[in-house]
Length: 71
Image (cartoon, rainbow, N blue to C red; front, side, top):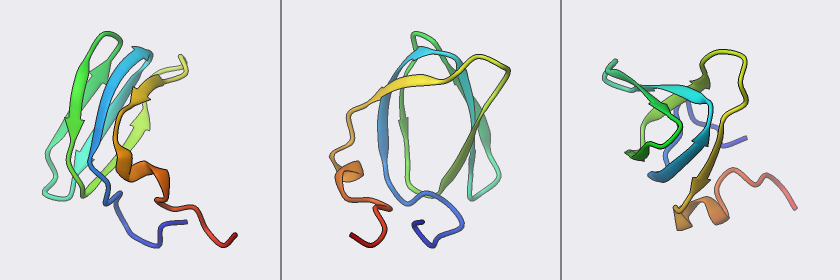
């Protein structure tokens, strides 16, 4: 929807449940899991690790209009 190879939004998240793996454009990777507070800079891709759904609060105001598509 966004038309980019990676997400271009900075996320500030508190993870409630599950895990994700994050890969930055420079190839560095990290994992975020339940109880973690994290800042994910623009230029990333992420996916769920394991079978448990990933649930997090994202406090980034940039998400309000990002990748909304035509309305």
